Image 1: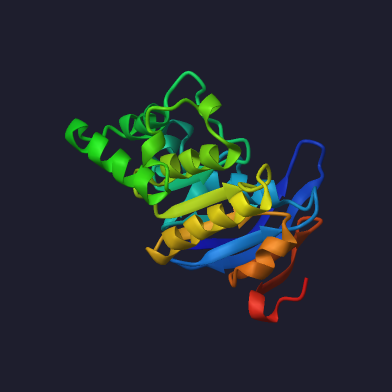
Image 2: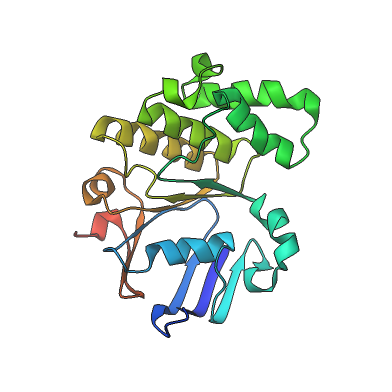
Length: 226
C-alpha cells in the first residue's frame, strides 16, 4: 500500500531531513512514527500527503507514484486520505455538523447521503449530541473527535495523524487512541506521529523510530523497548 524506496528529502539549506528511507506499510496496519523534535516525523507525513515532494527515490501510495502527481490533481489523491491535526483546524464560525459537512461537499457527495452519513460518523466518535455546537462550546477532546469525524467521513483508505493527542490530557488521549484503533480494526491504515512514549506502551502497534532523518528502529511493541 505504502512504499518508500531510497527516499531522501533535502530542503533549500541542503540539509537532509530524511535519508535513505526504505519501508513498506501494508494495508490495515497501525503505525506509530516517533522521534525527537527535528527527527523527520513531520516531513515523513508531509511526503505522504503530497504537501512536500521527495528529493530522490520513489514513494508509492495506493499504487500511485506520489511525486508524479500534478499540483492541480493533488486534491484527487488527497480524497483517499484522512488527515488529523494536533491543533484540530476546525472552522470556529461553523457548527460541528458544518465542519464535517464541508469535507463531504468538497468531494461532491450526493446531497441525500450527507446528513445520515455525518450523523452516523458523529455517533461513531461519541459526539452526535454535539452536532449543532460550535468549537468554542467543546472541550479539546471533543474538538479532536470532530477532527476525526471529518477525516473519516469520506471513507479514506489511510488516516494520517500528526501529534493528534499532543494538546490533550491523558484520559482524552486514550479515548482518541481507542477511536483510532476501532477505525483501524475496520480496515483503515493508520499512521500516527507522536512523542508520547507512554501512549505507545499501552497500544500494541508497529513503531517506526526516526533519528536525524534515518530509520533506526522498526518493530512491534512486544519487542520494542523505549
